[in-house]
Image 1 (cartoon, rainbow, N blue to C red):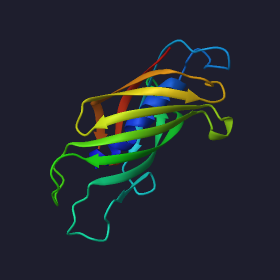
Image 2 (cartoon, helix red, strand yellow):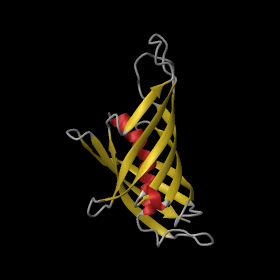
Image 3 (cartoon, rainbow, N blue to C red):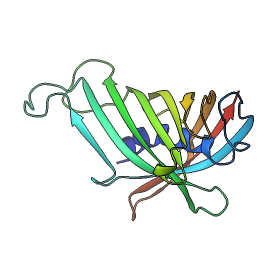
Length: 181
């Protein structure tokens, strides 16, 4: 569970951090400054994420890649109230020799869309990340934004090492810090 939740959550958390209090966001012709910190809560349930194995019908062939999509909640780090959400699409490539059993070492290219407030407000931040399975931290690039985040640029740091897993509710919560440039 943690692998799927972690892959889906990496991009979401980075994007959410940018949305939570970035000096009013970035408007055309201006730029946000400083750092924003938020939490991402990923849920490992069919309605929140899914995978599409490269060879789903032929079990004798090893999987060399997967597609993963998911959505997460963005949380205020102090109150843990919901402040937005995220959606992501990831391409996962398995490193190493082909085997029938997963042995770690996957690398994922994550594309994340974060929204702050309601989706209808169109205040989005877009992130691109490269994730190595099992890494305690992740670095992402802020590639763009819309609405009050139009033209956003910067980087995001995702901290999985200090994340918390709630096995009863099937969630994994971790911290993201976005720095706008």
